[in-house]
Length: 586
Image (cartoon, rainbow, N blue to C red):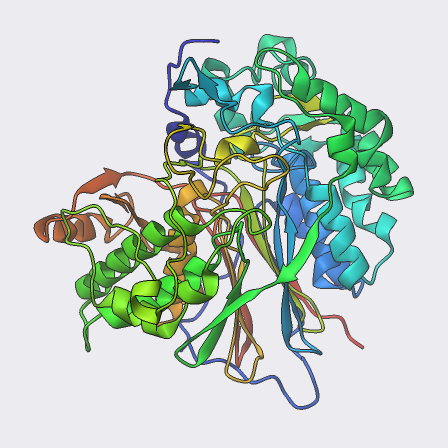
């Protein structure tokens, strides 16, 4: 392994320090009042806010044909796997939250990667010591069974209206004819060559470092392997991916040295995406809906309600920020302690979201100089204690992608997809990269200590911070679609947009642009590169918080708000996303 010359967390910020401009028109400041859907049905047209212009165009292409938001999401992600492989792709997985305008219902589709059946709790331990993260990240043990293609199929079977093969046409076209390499991808490659095996792995090395040199922004890149893989999926369905040559190649790459994993073709063939109930909870006159565990979507409900118990009446912006920080600290402490794979452990989501428990938690914030601890819902609600788990130290790297889509009929998708760290595990198969999702489990193992909720278990799905969120008004009409990439910071990034729009009087774009504040554990990280970040940092320091100042953050928020004047969308200027809208005349 090469010298660890750079910190992984700096790679993304450096690459995105000068993102491409977002071609969206300035938006008016609007009151955060939910708009009512007219009696004669949805009339606001469609909108897509996606992480790369090529992918935004692919989504709009499906929407202009009258496709469902799910059709657009699949088409967009197939393109993202090509033009933004550092963030997500076929070799990873993700979560999709879907709102159906006709039924007013929200559903959650879980395409999270799964541990091979041969995975063990101590597989990242060496002589009773946890593997260095950078070694674990690049190992075959880090590769989970990919869920993206199975998620596509589950979503399309459940909601899609366009033909399956149509959804892959934009990505196949781009992979065949070529696309321009973005500044974001190109900016990461020199740093990745210092700390990963991306420039050494067969296939990946030739693709990302032609003639031994990293790709340059603006270069035209073709990926015929990816086009071939997508063509097979388009013609044969998911079986082309989860069996036969592609599955064999995935298993072979995951088992390869160094530090090969245990994945087999049987693990891949057995994988299933899962439809689960979305988690919804009231906040003021709204209904916040998100993804259930293994996602951290419930944190959006927790943070919003805890904030209301913590913020004083007629609060100043400084007091609002302090309440936001304290709400995060409490919610993260509970998430870190209790959340894991709901198919392997009991996650007490209902108790953690009980208004009585949230009120009690809000009355007992941690002191600014203290490390927040998990609460015990049974102390408030009675009954048995939820569980006795060991401490969790999982630190998800800041990768991933998020996009938000509303179709011409008012259906909506909030979807977050990932390969985990930048460029996943660097292992290349069929024109795409495999994930390193197993590092999202708690990698430390002590047989004599209580198990952490997020322990590695055969077949389990690792806990994720991904929080795709859809908010409804009091009539269960669509109000907001939001979410972000960013590793452990995702819940904080996403909650900022909700509070910013609803409570802080911000426009959609202002809520996205506002400095990010992440409060997990005993440190509060504040983005001082954006105003009024420095003033917020100074205020929190004066209150006694341990503050870490950073110039940039790696959020990739994509938000759509329904207003009386129509749809307003925003893309995060910290990345390369764009917003497109239109209307299909019927």
